[in-house]
Length: 82
Image (tube, rainbow, N blue to C red; front, side, top):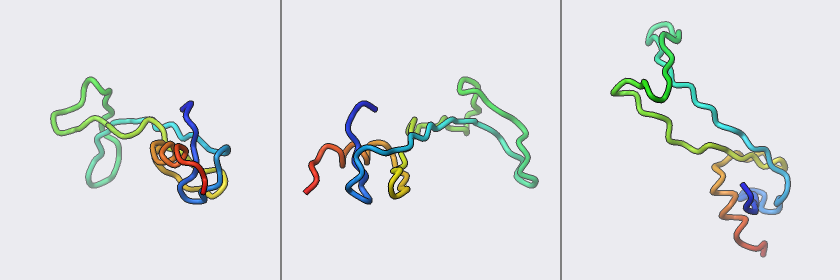
């Protein structure tokens, strides 16, 4: 998070961002009602329940509203504005 960002959409914002922390809750739902019937910790997942492996954070440009993975903002931040 200490690397420079630049928005890949509006291409000018390099300073105003919202950091969206991804918090995972592994659950099993009833297929008919949609009610949660079981919650899991990461250590007790069932064999067919894969653990979450997505990004820890999503980034939102506070100028145009684009939400993307942090690596997109980092990649655009590595290159100067032309």
